[in-house]
Amino acid sequence: VNMSLQNPEGDEPRKYVLMDFEEARKWTVTGGIGAEIAKIGGCATCLDAPAGDTGFSPRVSFGLTRRNFLGTGHIISFQSRASTLQKRGVLSYNAPQFRGDPDINLLFSGVYDDSRDVRTYSARRREASVQVGQRWSRASTMLYRITYRRVSISDLKISDPVLIPQFLQPVRLGIVAGTYIQDRRDDPTDSHRGVYNTLDVGWATRLLASQADFTRVLGHNATYHPMGLGSRYVLARSLTFGFLKRLGETHEIPLPERFFGGGPTSHRGFPSNQAGPRDLQTGFPLGGNTVLVNQFEMRYPLIGENIRGTLFLDSGNVYSDLKKLSLRVTQKGLDDFNYMVHAVGFGLRYRTPVGPIRIDLAYSINPPRFFGCHGTREQLLTGCPEKRQQQISHFQFHFSLGQAF
Image 1 (tube, rainbow, N blue to C red):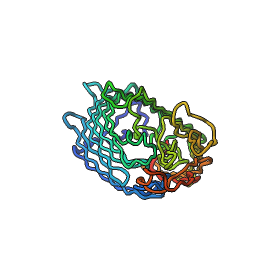
Image 2 (tube, helix red, strand yellow; image 1 turned 30 degrees about the vertical axis):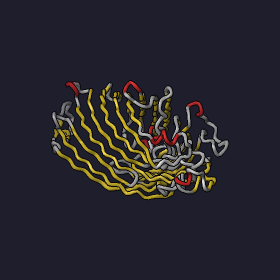
Image 3 (cartoon, rainbow, N blue to C red; image 1 turned 90 degrees about the horizontal axis):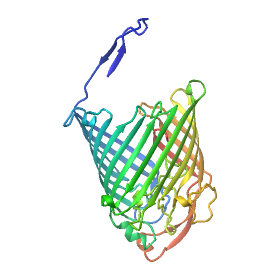
Image 4 (cartoon, one colour; image 1 turned 120 degrees about the horizontal axis):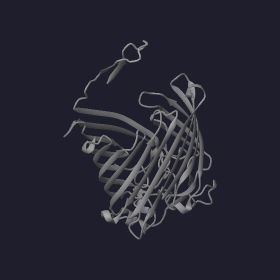
C-alpha cells in the first residue's frame, strides 16, 4: 500500500488521502543462505571441549506460502531451515477473523525439528498444536494453545547410569498453555522507548496423555528509556525469570524441555546454551529448572546515523531448582553452579532495514569452573579415562542480527 496526502502544505481543515493498492500474489517462494560462527564446534562422538570449540555452521532456508487458502486472508505456509546444527520444518495454517471476529485468529501448526545446538545431546521433536489468538487491545494479546509433542534424544554425554536410560527413552507430552503479550515499543526491531512484557504458563498433564507431568512458567519484562535530545541515548533493561516444577512421581522432565541459557540473546557471559548445571564427570551442560537473567544496556550514537555503540551488563544464571536460586557471586566448588554470573561488555550496532547487525564482546567476571572428562562416550561406561579441570572462558564474542532484547 502506497499512501500520499493531497496538498500536504495547504491550510485546508479536511484533505484527501490517496491510496494505491497492489495485491500480493497467491504464491510466494522465499529462500536464503547464512552462517553461524561461535563456540558451537567440537567432536560429536567424544567428550573433549564440553564448553565448545570455535565452529562454523552454514545455513540454508526455504519457504512456500499460499494466501487466500480456503478463505480470504487464510494462509497456509511451509518454512524450513537446514544447517549442521539443526534441521527444521514448520507447516502452518492461519485463519484470521475466526467466526467473523476481527480480534480472534486460529492457527494450526506441525513441527519437525532435529537439532544439536546443545552439545550434551541431539534432540528430535515432532509436534502438532492448535492455537487461538485473542487481541484484547492495540497493545495486548492473549494466546491459548494445546500441543502434542514427542521428544527423543541421542548422543547423550552424561555419566549418571540411573538417568541415562530414562533420558534416552522417547517421551510423549500433552501440554495446555497460555501466553500474554503486551507490546508498547515504538519499534520492535530497534526500540527507543516503551515497554514489552510476556508471560507464558504451561502444564504438561496426564489428562492430555502426557508421560511427564510438570508446570512451566516463564516471564519477561523489558523497558526502554530515551535519554538526551532526539532519543539518541537509550537506557534499556530486561529481566527474564522462569521455573519448572515436576508434579508427582512421573517421568523426569526431558532434557530438551529444561531451561538452557547463554548466548547472544541471553546471558552474553556464556557461549550458547552453556549456562547452569553441568554433569560432574563430563562437564557438559544439563540445563536447569529455574532461570534468572537481568540485563542493562546503554545505547548511544558512535559514527554517523547508522553505527551505534552499546555498553552492557548481564547478570544471572540457570539454576538446578527454584529453591537453589541465589544472588551470590562466588562459586563454592567445582560442583556448584547455583550462583550469579556477571559479565560486562561493549557492542557495535549497524542499522539495516531489517534490524541492526550486532557485534558484542563480553568479559565474564566470575565464570564457572568444572571438571571435564577427555575420551569417548564408550570409555565413559567403564569410568572416566582422564579428568581435567576446565573453565568457561572470560572472553565471549557474539555476532547476530537484531538487538539482544
